[in-house]
Each structure stands twice: as C-alpha cells, then as structure tokens.
Length: 259
Image 1 (spheres, rainbow, N blue to C red):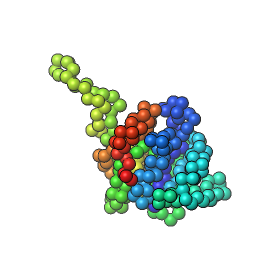
Image 2: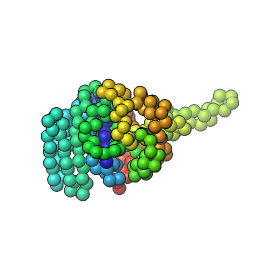
Image 3: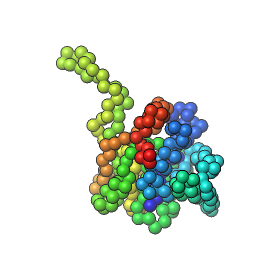
Image 4: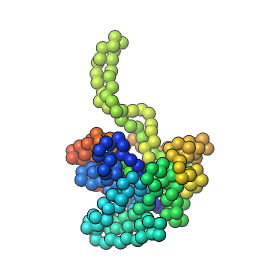
C-alpha cells in the first residue's frame, strides 16, 4: 500500500523559515519533519511513498539525492513526465521507495491527490497525510478500522491544544487559576487518511480536499472518523517548530513510535 504525502504548500506562517525552505524539510532534532513521517509509516510496514511536490519541490529532491550516503543502495528511475522514483535501502535495514511527483506550484490539496492517481498501480486503497503533522497514531489499527467499516474514506480525528492559556474565574470575576494551553474537547481533522481509490471520483484538478470532496463524502455517509487520543501536533508556525525541538531534546518526542 502506498502513502501519499502532501508536501507542496507554502509555509507562509513560518515567515522567513518557510520562504527559503519547504515546510517538510524544516528540521526537528536535526532531521526534516518529512523524515520523521517516513519513519512513522515505515514502522508500520508502509514503505512506499509518493511525495506531492510544489513550492520549493526541487529542494526536497535535492535533500534525498544529496543524502544518499545514508544508504547502502541507491537507484534513480527517471520518468517521461519529469517525475522520478527513488529506491533506497538504509544501512539500518530501512527500505523506502519514493516517487517524487510534481503536482503544481499552487495546486490545492485535492488537486495534488488527483494528479498522483497514475502512480497507485492496482492498489485498491492508499494512505494520505500532510507533510507537517506528526502523531503516534497506530496506523496498523487505522488500516484495520478502515477495512472493517467498508466506506470510501477515513480521517483521523484528534483533540488539538488551545493556542492560548485559559483563565478560571469565580462568580465575582476574580481569577482563581490559569490553565496553560489545555487539550480541547472539540475534534479536528488530524490528517492520516485512508482512501479507497474511488475517492478520485470526488476530486478534480483544482479542488481543496478538505472542502467539497470531504463534505460530499460526509453527506453521503462515506467518511468515517478514527478517534485518536494520543500525541498529535502540527508544525504550522516557527513557534511550533521550536516546541517540536524542545520535545525532542527533552526525550518527550511521543511521535517516535519506531524507538
């Protein structure tokens, strides 16, 4: 089964850090967030990847080409349309196969997924995730959940942390306590999707995955949420990147399921 990673967007909220480096290459513990994603998926036996490239996509290609010294075997297969496939065998036993697909500079998320259909081969289902979010999702359980319910699409529902600390007050308005960025009760789309390939009937070259396609699937009761109560965090801002690195350095990198 293949895993599609959306890593072509502009990291506008990262300021200067997202202007010169694609968000997926911003480092956590000295390795790009994209590397961390590959480690999470390959831990569950999912080692065949398709990168949906766009903004600064050449930098992502260069990273993997220039770091081939990490691997014992390295092959490159060029395609007629400019995409290429990279097969790597890590010296530590890791095996990743990566297809780099140019999906357009400013293509929306649904359009990017639409454009990689030709790389899925005969696979009936495939995974999709964002190139800036890490979690300790049990992907094996997620795939089994998707298989059991038999609908077209599964997303992972997560509880985000508030961006702000909360005040607690008594009836007179006196502040009694502070709660620093609590986990919220509400659920959001945390990515880590599994799709049946019939999802392509819901996509076109310009659509936003999270709008019309998912809304239509929801209306048709073809979208099921897999609840995840463990670690989940998105690297949306430079502050998020700093927090990721603090977690790594303090030994609290809960997304490191491969340890």
